[in-house]
Amino acid sequence: MTQILKLTEKQPLSPRITRFRFEHPKGLPLPVFSGGAHVMVTMQDGEVLRRNAYSLISDPQDGSGYEIAVQREDQGRGGSAYLHQKAQPGMLIEIGAPVNLFGLNQTARKHLMIAGGVGITPFLAQLHELARFDTPFELHVSVRNRADLPEVVLPDDAQIHVSDEDSRIDLNAILSTQPLGTHLYVCGSARMIESVLAQASALGWPRDALHSEEFLAPSPGEPFKVHCARSAMSLTVGAQQSLLEALELAGIDAPWLCRGGACGQCETEVLACDGQIEHHDHWLDPTEHGAKIMPCVSRFRGTLLTIDR
Image (tube, rainbow, N blue to C red; front, top):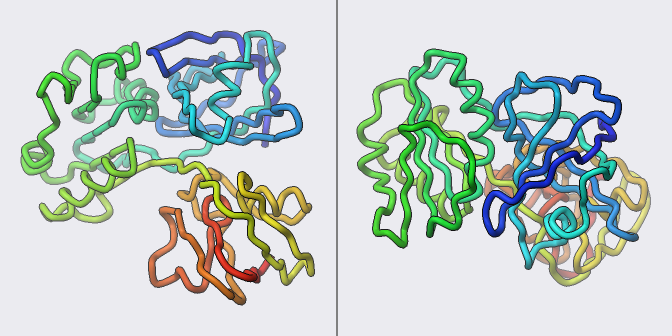
């Protein structure tokens, strides 16, 4: 389900991060959501249709509007550039229903949140949620310099780690002193997420207490051909196009929730592969790499890929 909402506010939070607020054109209330949820923003950029997922940062119980914070990516595929350069208050933009793949575990005795740079965004809505409950939490935010820290309201006891000020985050000290029943949540760059989860696993944290979120942008690459067996159609995926986008353009159904390699909805069986699949997702187990592909972010290099679509 999607809604056409009006962009009502556009406010810089840092040199590269901007807050966008969307409201119903008629002032009607929007569905409430849970902390950690994201929405899909659909942007008609000339002849190109762009869809990007962004975490909601506003109060989950405030139905007067949805807010997101977007970091400008000059080398990205164009979604963040469109919002920063072309989107202006008053415009109508298609916004998807909130979807949560990064919610707080309600059985946790404590929530430990670690954010890297713009990775603070999903935690902002969760902080509103935590303010209503009595569950203990601890928030660490790691940035390269103060300019990278968006101007948002954080708890007084939030711990800010600034690399340029020699106050790097000490993962071992943080992860080794948490009480039993703590759940860990990490959002940031792929390198940071991998480092935090690896350290937690090495310290014996149970797997079901570890939560992470990173929406991947489809990587550009060489064009490739794909045959869709069920639809009896052959397609060419462009250099700047994802396999999922090529399927949609051809009218072939492929369900999705995040378009970033995290939700697993667009998982597709590989029937034949004359070449090499370039897997970029967080969903498939390495043992599945020969039999499946995530069309939203993964690519192919070779003669022909045949999939069950």
